[in-house]
Image (tube, rainbow, N blue to C red):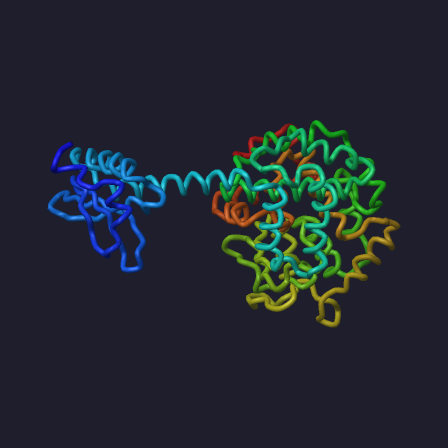
Length: 416
């Protein structure tokens, strides 16, 4: 046995009780605290810097084990590697791997509730926020709520939707939209890889057609191929110009009735031809921008014509005769006088159906155009200048379709 190393014995260690450091050799020390606890310390010098590295308590590491550990770390020092730094790096790596593993193990239900908690204040009322999570609780959670979202498959989503796709068409559509929102959110948080637009399209193609079921369920949405003719009827009607312009603007922008009826000139940017609705007037409580098509801009020009030449218009764009917002009932009565059962809100569905089935525009673009909540990252992406221009093309194609001049008879290249 070398006199420079292995100086201590198991019996000595057992009998030692005085606080202090007891050298075993090679920088390995037994440390006894003033409270009597015993632990191992390795002292070494690297780059002229002295360091003490804790090797754990005597209760966990015997003398022989402590010597083996000290030997391993001395070898690192000989190679110019600081064992404390390496251990810290290894701990950090393992911590990162654990976090990554935890992310991958997050269940669909956990992700859905996390998204709901983070975004529920964006909904205008608590009832809608409750409905959002309740549809998933009813239909999705029983099937794959506890499953890691990273393992969720299109087949599982299809199995949830298929039983209700025809019998509860609108509900099924909302369930699909909300599942997709959760998956997109989880992908943005690196909980899963997510599904691309093509995979979502494939999923919808694997489901039976539910257009007829949706129509039976609502009796409210005008078929998109009849909207253009209905617009012309409204133009020829005896309603006031303000009512006719408001109706046409609703159809062309796919906006909600209240958003258009309350629209003011100060929300219109003439330079960019964009209508920006403040969050206070939006259902989701988020500012929403609408790139205006040429047809929509023409409606505004007609409305502006009521102002004296050179005057800057202000206030309501489509006021009633009493200079107050047009009532929702006024627009409803417009449809009744034309012997139509369509609701004003239903024209948003007409636009949505056209965009998916005829225009073949991607899901998220259509959802953003309708100011639906699809996740913060997606919203930010569709407010980028290039995406705004793609949305402008979407609204332009819709206007052209209504005029019978559409160029989207075949699926267009939407640029992702």
